Image (cartoon, rainbow, N blue to C red; front, side, top):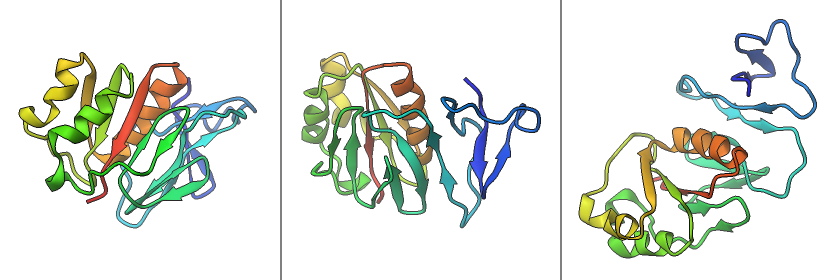
Length: 162
């Protein structure tokens, strides 16, 4: 897997100057963060029916070309737009009990523009079910989801915008 990314129609990365991306190449930004006002487009060239993050910016993510601006749970085979957790402050154990019922091996919790850790008692339903949980900012959750999904892992990204 190459760690090149496309920003403003220019390729960046170690091999970018020498090698143009192959038709089936997967391009991810696995290093660095965006500066204020920049957007990032993540491209997956191979045609697939699985959900991948194809971009994100301030206050939104793009999944397979569809812009989403509210809390959401993204799985490779479906998108749950009705996740009731509206913000980090409103997280409750029942939100994580619903995630545990999805049958995933790992849940990526994207906590918005900054990294915030929920209290242990809130994520206890995932721990009790033996489901791994990784907490990160929203952009890191998108990038990590794409990598784990490409590895055919049973992953879900639960994203909060507020």
